[in-house]
Length: 274
Image (tube, rainbow, N blue to C red):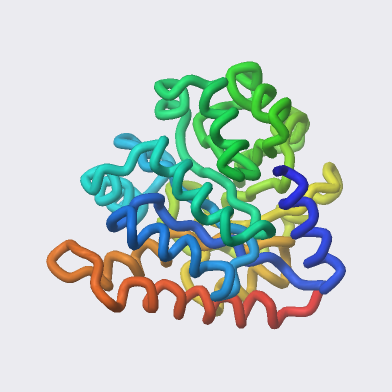
């Protein structure tokens, strides 16, 4: 469970390189294609997979991921089918960490305890739930940790040293630094500021720090890999899905388009010695 994340970052630290954290939306553009993408990501170079839980009101996400979620919901994706996809993935991959990323509402509707039980059974390793602040850790974070799931917390450019202890208190797996002020895919990061922020976090925690929310291509991924323990890419990948569609449906180029981009990103991230 959570140990898979720890083992992966420990191995990468030994190899002196950053992790490529690849995000796709569960069920986008349809369940069959989404599962094929999920299974293809590790071979393409993804070290950790973030699997989006589609939701109708994704307030932290920009237009690309919003659109991906709507495509998934239109195709019939639910939280239950998302967990089933993770289980299908896990049947063929015992090592790659999978972190579910999304919002609390679908989990609340599912039921927190049944969700955590089923997520653990499916082979989920951690959760990123962007609308669960530290003040509400009793709702989901602490029960998740009791089930052996890492609760990955977000830090932002506005997370100062007074706020940081609360953010870090129950965080597990890694700390996810949102490199821009705004929603996913909204702007390019300022690499100098990112370096300063990562160094500041490192003074407060031994957790790996992954950086995302503004990494659009191999060049920016390489720049982040020089600064952080992980590079998270999402909007660029879901846009690769969108551009591959034909009349709104998956095409023969959908999976190859995404894996080619992941391979390009992986070459940049993994080629940086640290």
